Image (cartoon, rainbow, N blue to C red):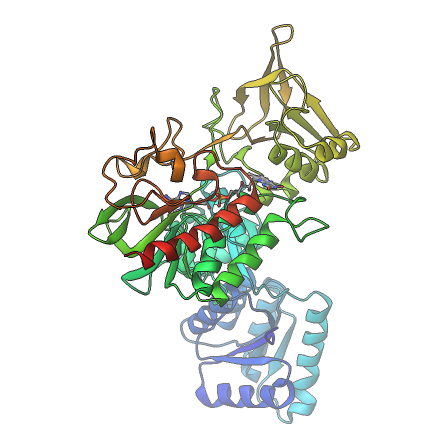
Length: 552
Ligand SMILES: Cc1cc2nc3c(=O)[nH]c(=O)nc-3n(C[C@H](O)[C@H](O)[C@H](O)COP(=O)(O)OP(=O)(O)OC[C@H]3O[C@@H](n4cnc5c(N)ncnc54)[C@H](O)[C@@H]3O)c2cc1C
């Protein structure tokens, strides 16, 4: 924790130095003494302290200063640090005017200059001010601060990005007085939100994901032009490949468009991953895997969306949206799958404002006393229902089928049955989302009886199956009709190798139709959609990368 500040403002350098010296002597061990020579300079120092999340205990201002009087300074300082205690320094001749002014603004004390000896005239006053401040102190905010609108998609996306990347932050709405103070300190209005203030006090208005990532210390730029292995996608398969690739001496870089962890990172509890008998949350697993890959030497870049791939001679080249490229001997595609969008009127307009894809754990506390609906009948939806039942008034799982048995694990069905505020609506679909500015109601259609009803709903979380987003692979990498990447024996037709294949061997088990480009995890055609299998395939792909490199 940093020391709270005592700030003194005086335009007379000799007086200013003397006050600061006396304050430092008695309070310097526990407080930082900040000195300013004008009201403007004092306010600038306070703005900086506000953005850094610092605390201010006492403000001492000279009454008579040329551009801004001590009273004006204290008035403005109060907007930034309302809990700081305030005192005016006055010359004897100004006492009456100062007392009048004290009645106008809320100043705790006035101190007559000179204050010698400080033991008698200065310290007792400052002690009293500090006592008063300690009764209602400020709280230090050392994390990143985010100011935004509660019901705005850009604010939600920014918070979701930070949460997914496991970056701790403190959230303030624009209506919150502290949110307002941060906007003032940053010198911007509410139109600039979402505003992010970094831990070292740097304000960034509506940053792009790449700017945000860089500001919070996530790497976005590759350190080299050429690698042994480029991994596209930072889910379990990509992280698994990164751990094995780096630990086996390959120059490895992992490229992730959003946040490492992938789908698994969104899981509130993974119960069936080997070695975690009590289950593990997706974020814990991700945090450990990311640390492990980093420690072993893998480079990990976020907010890097790979948009094209090509074989250029023996190099395998991936391209980003901005036209920049990274080349390597080999590539592992580990891009997994993404949620299918809910196709019904209103759903897209209300996304981020009550309608969310995946668990959106950032919204958990906002769900308090709300009716939450979850669409989907797979384990991911079941886990979300268990999770949100701890916060919401009610949780309703909406599924098309007649029961959960065919799509959800037995242990989860049992778990859900035992939770009082969770119910299941079978044979039902969400056919409309309604609300003015945020989700308020849903229309549900029940195929069993062909009836529709409109229900109040504060939140809708969508888990309706997923699809690979692999269009960017173009004609280079062969895929099945649904977009999953063919590998190994799936590429062999009637015992024949794929068209254009130029090696005197068959494709390796996880190799695509382009030698040196591999696929692992959910994105691979006919893969098992599990964390363990994704991690295993990531590891196996690295072994095949070695084999490929040996044959080069
Ligand atoms: C809520 C939930 C709960 C689950 N619970 C369990 C469970 O309990 N047990 C279990 O075994 N499985 C569970 N699963 C399934 C499991 O999470 C997946 O099988 C696993 O995450 C697949 O890993 P992956 O690395 O192949 O892909 P993903 O996890 O999908 O990761 C792919 C990554 O690639 C990134 N990416 C995609 N395209 C690009 C691109 N062009 N450029 C850069 N990056 C890109 C994505 O942003 C993503 O981070 C769950 C899934 C969900 C959604």
